[in-house]
Image 1: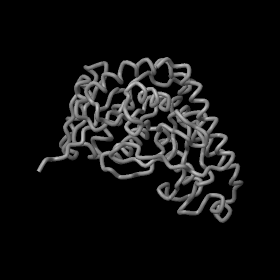
Image 2: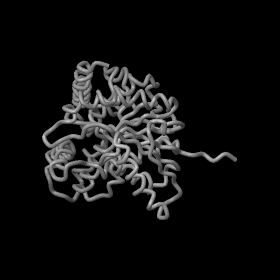
Image 3: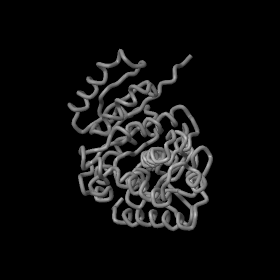
Length: 316
């Protein structure tokens, strides 16, 4: 019987790429991990360091390679590019990283015509769109990490305020992974009870509408605060990437707010942004058409138009 080997390639071994490689290794999700970086010596060093812990984890083959290592990959995760600096927005990175992707994507496609491309580099929504257009892949096979991490931050902060397990909080951040993202308060719930009904019966005495607004502001500004404090964010995004990768490799049909090409949704088309989507072995099977409130619809359109304005400035 032929053994199914799940192969994940990571392009870019900076803080995010290397942390994801470590997190993926200890998760046991992938059977083969390939590390690629423009600094080949650095990739070899990361490879050696990870392999020296092989006796502590489930069997996994970890190698470093050039782009030929993408051959037969199930998923290629792109974490390459300039990193966000303090006081710099994700959108500020767009031109630099778009040029880097114009070089990277054809090299990946040359060897991995059937792979799924998962983009994590910022601005992730713009670079997901760039990857889709340059690769020529069908939209389901090009996705970005989107607001999977933002939504996790959102759930954590709600859980802290409401004193419940974050796994019992169901809430999404959608739109751009960035300054125009928005919370879907109309569907946020704890154990199936929407927050609008849960908060008034909670034992905590607070102005819940004001507190919820503060929670979202903290979600939106979390990355800036972390970058200011320690220079980069990488632990939580590493975990988020493993969650997306396992949903694909295990064909889970999981609902995750990844960045995907949106068409004909609240008059929005031809832009990649985050919306809860069914993720499985084919990539993004479909996105869910949430019934948003009027205010949420307006914010979502604003987020989409902001991204489309940036896309128009890029020469693809």
